[in-house]
Length: 405
Image 1 (cartoon, one colour):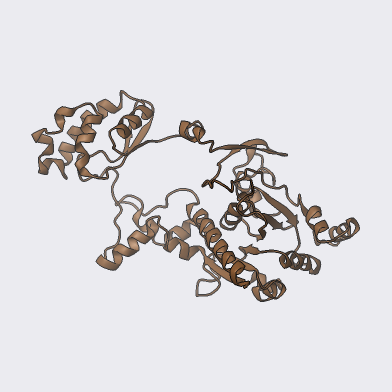
Image 2 (spheres, one colour; image 1 turned 90 degrees about the vertical axis):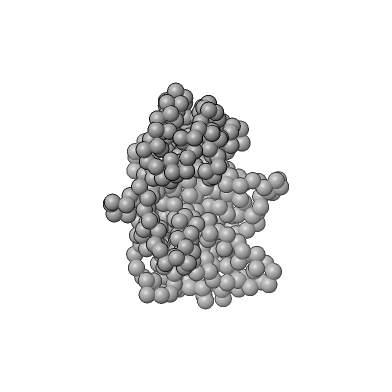
């Protein structure tokens, strides 16, 4: 079976997270992604942990290994005349080029969109940067933490009596990569119809502001009420319905209240049908906003919870139609029976780190499958790619000696 993006040629000039995730999505669905890396160490993500065996090594970065599967690595010194000329030769037969340099770098290298489109008018060029190619913030530095703060999401996360905090890990950069892949492929579809390429300008800041991760909902609400989002105290539920994290015999579960009319389901779940119509608990002033009565009911709930495992609680809750999920460790996730049944995780062999288990396909298509694969070694495909451009072994040796590779 052919892959969805078979025949698509992508030149990858990205680094760290957002850009590489964008091109990874294309590579894993069949695109030929040529990752151009600096000869003196490659993508800086190669030096970002975690490292297998806690050994800082260019070929052992878990971040790099995950974000660059199915790509071919070529080392090029784009500051050299020869390196620039090789890239232009690659661009001539490419469909897409994705870069994540700071604004102005491509122009200073003599590789701006005007130059590239003159070589290949049908080229789609995607530029991913912190704040975009224009505007007063254009040259500002940025981190995931600052991005979360500037976009407004941090204002609503944390506890009321403390300063706001960011939720963990680099979610926003992965989100940016996914949006960038979608936008780039949409532009490529347009280029296949009219033969004209275009330049896409994507800013992490704008994608954070428009992210569904609290930001958009808060913006819409503010337009109508002018009220800023509030940071809620842990366990500040407004009814007797279990909402949030609760302990079990071997860990925790998370309940989600979708409808206070599900009271009968909760009582059925904990095997207390006698409470469904209990006049004390269902009395409105007790059911809603009464902290003391809530503590009384939670005493009953905790007694039931602490006699069961987190999976038993989740299964019992789901059986009555009340949303609940077990809080799983990563070890639990790797052994999850549902993920195993769908064959989600894939084992991939790598010449340096050996066999590793990776997340599988983000979505399935019936006729054009996703493909598993490993990340390339630094410069692993340089000779292969240059030979395809007509360079001889002697030419390649001279380029190496001259510092172009």
